[in-house]
Length: 233
Image (cartoon, rainbow, N blue to C red):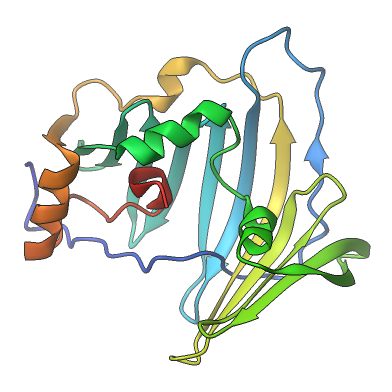
């Protein structure tokens, strides 16, 4: 694996959601649907869990994912396509590729957008719609679940697109929030947009090999931010 001692490693807290800076209600910018082919999406969200907020850009084509996030001046790209979860540092031009679990790969068959399913996850865990909320001058539907872990809630547009998602952790008393600033669908995205750039030094890991390696310490430029796409849960 290629690393540079001069550049600090970047550590990310696993998150379900993060901040709201009073943005207008997110709306999907609709373009004429393409003739056939998988659905594509783009969104930008501001994330915070008490520290400095971070902005993540997300694209999808069917079940494929591209995520870009800058932390400490380091641009980290996470790519999920087929049987690989790739994490690269674009400045260092290096990273890792992890074999995804069979369960995660099986979920791709549905062809759904691989991010921002906040409402579906809350409902699947036993949560329910609790009313309407006004954000940025427009109303959205509020869904909530409260359990032994804490409280999760999300406000979504009539099309089911999250506008803001919040989580409160009972044990630590900490909270995190995600504010979705914009949505666009039917974005023309070439397949290679979901592959690492050529010339990058990529170290390959099998799924079990990666799990064993992370037990001994950090691996690669970052942990997988969208870990459910690696593990399938």
